[in-house]
Image (cartoon, rainbow, N blue to C red; front, side, top):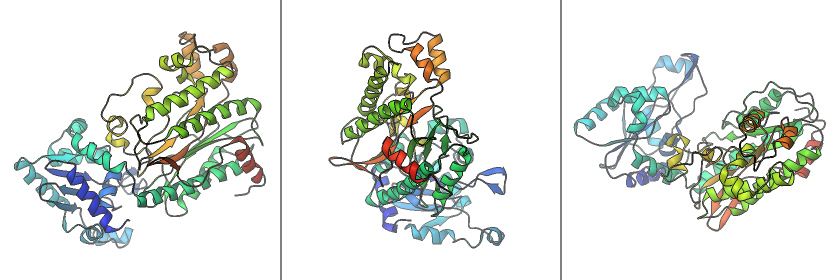
Length: 467
């Protein structure tokens, strides 16, 4: 946890972003995996963690805007619970750690909310993403579970986004810790990858590194020879000579802050000529995007610059043709780059995604519906203190290629005959994490090997890797 003053100041600032009423911030409960006592790894709601700092299940916080008071509600555990869990601090003791004097049980919370409704007070809540919290809102406030997103407070969402997206110095230290652990994960993978190894062996080692200092992974590990599948969580393949191996993984610190890096490495001792060609185009796009990072620059502009480099490179390989700008505006580039360029990162690996991309990444403005750019999570101007990922990629997706070719889509821009030779290529992605500064940007954490030479050098160091 941070110092108690951090949470006091955060809640005070939150009150200034909402005109009046009560702010209801729900923590998470334990989530059963296949029966009640066998639960998934507990992860606290990030906004609750940001304002209340407590990593215990079953808690709900209230920030009273009108009276300037904060409340913490939850049920104290019983001796039966202690038998299985060990001693747990009382609710009042937990509350004092984060500067809260007013506490009560869940029945007390129900009475508090009932009284607030009777007085006609506005109750602000964030859009819930867990079914149990939707049920609680139905029980407490008579909000139908299918209507909970409609009941969410836009005023509160905007206030939380404005506050959470600017990272403090303490937060940046936590993120740097997560990123440095993530760099260790990627360097280890580069030294492990070789013909005959299973994807699952590498994924298991990544989990070990992330967890060894009391943290966890920040999202399910992507460790695959099929990098053309963007979120591929299958780890059952055995690697062989000539394969490319894509690793997208990150560590989360014990306080919940995330790192998120991607690397693409050869399974053989070095990249093939064709792999080098595509890799260097991806890396050029990556570096061009980084150089544009600065306050006031719309992230959508950075995305389009990354697209230009990719299309230009694909033209050099005779996989695309025609005018670069026309191809991008039509969406033809998305056959290779069907996703966004990056996202904000902090307590969530996709920071605040539960609050809605239209508010987190678009300042409330409508997103494009065009294939490719519609997956861009962040488009608005960058501001100092914002943490972002940069992760352009080039992917050869057989089903997408076949579908577009059959439909004769973008034949003015795509050389489908040449593209047939790349359908078993896979995908390439590099990813790094940056904080926007007053005059530009700063890389977070240690350098991750990303040039062809640096990746191959790490592989040579791991030629006798034994774990």
